[in-house]
Length: 202
Image (cartoon, rainbow, N blue to C red; front, side, top):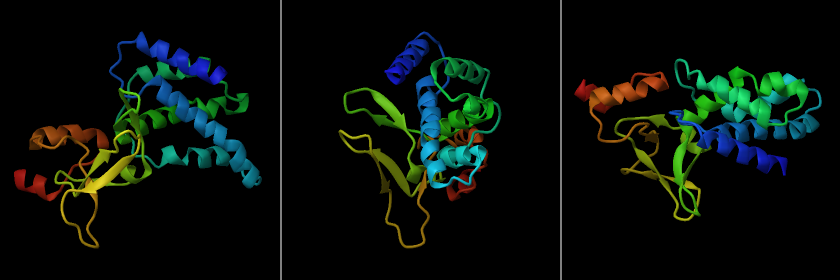
């Protein structure tokens, strides 16, 4: 099918690139395609909406994701150009769905919110999950994310006993890092951590 051919072409193109980008062309292409494919059903249920409003509703899962601060890099322009060649998008949606603002939003959202998961047939992939994407950071997190053996599902498990009212937090950076390195790695998330651990080590 044309979809499988597009995926194969994206993988072949990516394989020939020496990129530091953490989000693959295939992941971005699948995300854009999903948003566009969801639009007809949204419009059928809400015929009064404009095309722009329908697109926004379809794109909400990505709009809600945290975005990195600063520029993503010139390679996003290359992604945009390649996606225009690979994806079959209705002409009236090309400017929106394949516009740089939305592509950057998808790339940034995936880069900051994806979790590495083992694939059932071997190797590793990544996924974005609604629950984990809504959890705040702490350098002394109340919970951690684990994967289920033989599955692409993730589970949030408590690191300590929690009581009603406790915030469930995750660490956005590897545990065990020093104060300075944690601060440096958290810069891309656009906030300065003020958790108890940082206060004690400052």
